[in-house]
Image 1: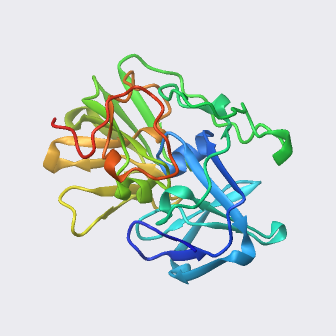
Image 2: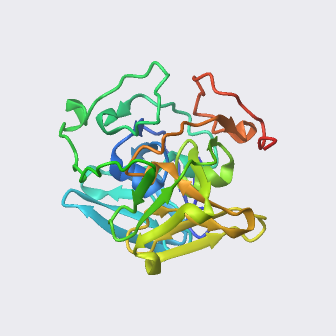
Length: 283
């Protein structure tokens, strides 16, 4: 039995059958929806999936002619997607509460990989969708022409856009359980930028936030139209926390370390040589 839940706990579900596939996806649509450097999905028989609560709180955004993206209305955590015709249930692995008993098998859409992500494991890599899964190049998003000294990003539907000028403060790969549930991923990569250099260029009225009640700082921001993750203005820390997976241009910074690896997902192996902190860094 493997259970899963969203960040706020509204969505709860379980799988009682073994998973059949586990894959990392680097496509730009997954990165924007999750706000992570890549999304990791597990898939299993639909007959083995059941909702335990919150199904009525699932929102959906039609991201392309081929499919839609589901998420929790309250916290925007990615929700399971069910494919009745294929008798398949697909879930974001970062939202699982137990070890799923399977490990990642490949990287998909590495041709769309974020420029600041380095793949250092030995898993097979596919530039697009491999032939055994139907092939295809996926949905191509418009290319944003970089501007010197400016980092730009948008949500999945494009209604929200933002930019940051000047040098970013820091960038962490965070493995804490809150980040994994919020992003539905192995970890998040958060870019911290000065609050005075950040501005919304459109769609600010569509930004919603969810803050974990018992947390001092932790919260997420998202687009109410598509569920795509967007920056959260943290005035208490005089900075803006940008989900790096949603960026359209290279921020000119790379992750400095892995933090909260003491809470790392059991199915994810860190294979790079970045420093690791069991909890938060000292700065």
